[in-house]
Length: 192
Image (cartoon, rainbow, N blue to C red; front, top):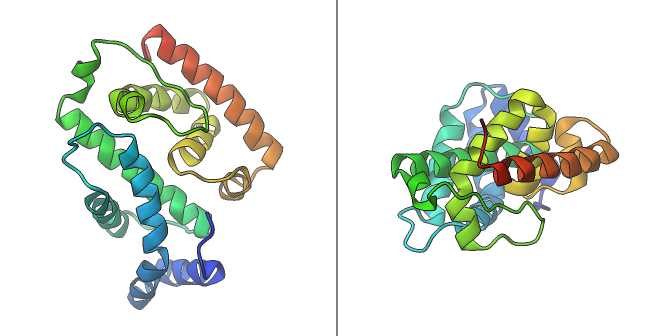
């Protein structure tokens, strides 16, 4: 995830954090393409005929970002991690509102491999995965964050380590353990 003007993105984030509204106006054009890439990644995993489109997902995440509580921005990677998290929340909220979970008849079939997740798997299990990920967050918040950043946000190991302020080895270890735990729980039928 390389955004042109990365130091500029970080500078603008910090200026925005300090209340400089013009910084947000300068920031949006610099990050828009990457936000669309993240949204496209999410939308590829959704069912056909989904009522949200990539642009709507970016816009909804943007509105939530602008209206959110003050965030202490760490870096460009942190910004995209928060943005990805907001997009995930938008899609999960949408799925819950449409009673999406009933379509699976209680089946859970999620893979957390880094390979592209097929639309049927991802769209079908988004709510179940979200519930299980929230259960993991209660047990081990950092492992949950690693999954959030890597799987949903598309961050690299290096970027994830930067956001969480841990070593790359820690990220790799957490990623491996979190995937195993989530897969085991999903196979059992979701969080208890």
